[in-house]
Image (cartoon, rainbow, N blue to C red; front, side, top):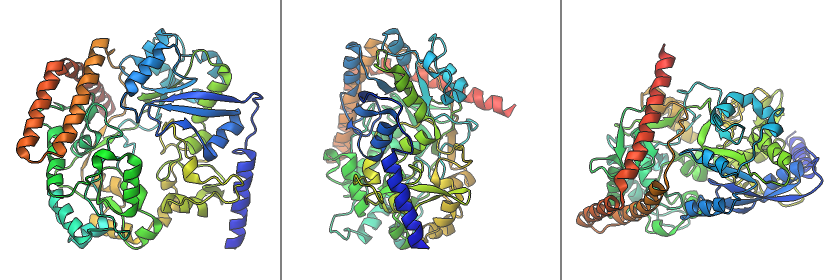
Amino acid sequence: MRRKVLSVLILASALFLMSGCNSKSKYQEELTIDVFASEANSQGIQSGWFARCIHDRFNMNLNVISINNNYNGAVLKDVRAASGYLGDIIFISAQNNALKDLVDAGLLLDMTPYIKDKDIMKYKDAIEKLNSGLDGIYAIPSSISTLPPDTPSDIIDSTYAPYLRWDIYSQVGSPKMDTLEDMLDVLEKMQEAYPTTQSGQKVYGFSLFDDWDNNMMTLAKQPCCFYGYDENGFVLSKADGSDYQSILDDDGLYLRSLKFYFEANRMGLVDPDSRNQDYGEVFSKYQDGAVLFSPWPFLGASAYNTDEHMAMGQGFMMADIGDMLIYEHGSSPDGVYSQVVCVGADVKDPQRMVDFVDYLYSDEGVYENQAAENGGSAGPEGVTWEMSDGAPRLTDYGIDVFYNQSSGVIPGDPNGYTYRDGVSILNYTAVQLSETAANGFPYSYLLWDSELSRTSTVLQDEWKEVMGADNTMDYLIKNDKIIVSPGCEYNEMEESAEIKEIREAVKRIVVQGSWDMVFASDIDEFEAIWDDMKRKCMSLGYEDVYRFDLQNAMAKGKLKQEIMEEKRK
């Protein structure tokens, strides 16, 4: 029977690849389009199975232009905008009046005549709200959800939480941690118990990277989320809109996080390669078991929690910190404006471009574009998952990909495509993964009955017994360790050229100073760098930018509170 199922899978996979995602393009002329994607994971021509899906549906190739990993990304965007062309498809923030600026500059297509009969218009209310005052439809919001705004957007694991190598944590006695700082002694004990990996690589508590640094050092911002705050420019805003901090406050969470990493480095817990490596290099160290702490589930667990490891009781799971209050994004009925999708004004084939946008919000588009190496959507039907007895389930290949990080070739694929190499690099979430597809089941395979019953491993069973919960989100909710930021969108004030210029100068100093503080030789140098960093920032006009960010943060906080007051009525 197993051989028969495998033969069917191979045939289905081959048919999938030969038929092009079960679709045949109606477009005769092949196009290679420029896709300006502000949050793309990498850039260049999209390759692999997702490229094949797009080519066979739309007879086009995607040349992705990313600013996510470019320190001068804001400059690149401005230069391209000034030239009169950002791209054929544009994924960009609509905040700070950016959408209106692009419309006024004539850079975007009014999609109204091309989109009116499309399936995407089931999100009409969210689309019209984003485009209000623009006299047309120029953008579609991301992460649209039909769930109430105070519903957590995460499903099983929280995006922001302290994840430790649970097996080693248990090995050293699962010491209680009352505060963030208590984690350092625990990690030191864990490092002593597990000093090197099987490959001989030295083990560290933390391995950092700077790819995602922007207004501040991103990895120093993450512990702030353990206490209910997230960034809004140079402001740290509490999830419920009740409090705000400057990242340069002497008694603020950002400085606390920097000191946390500084102390960790003095204890030998920080990977010395941290300043000279990127996300990909860090991910490979997690795969080897060379890192003990992860601030996100998509890093530690995604890299290390294979079926084999979890069956042996090894892997990353959330550990409790006594005073933590985890920041959680709420669902967004109006979508999210930090990323929206637009079409360039002078594209060669506007209908084809709008059809591509419509596809991203379709079931097939969500399954395919929002697929990930682990924890995303279910991927392409017939390859990583299939319908069986009226319900979806992962194929053997899908299990191998999602739980074992397999780099194996898709069964029966004549092109030699692997799943991992073909994942979309756009990094764009059209709709929330907990939403339901037309088949009646969530886009996220993690919510399927087949997976909830299949993923009972030694690691997870041991964690459940100790924590008294089914998963991370269940624990946080049961123990009042979560604070939800109600999903809402606020069109922020327009950022003037002066504010933008000051911000660019200040954030370079903040990022550089933050890294220098982490690797300072002693506390005197740490404090001297902080004082010097503050002095330079203030001299450049930091307070002006902070006041601007604070106004936006407070206005959004007020809206959050109004939403919750309305719900309580």
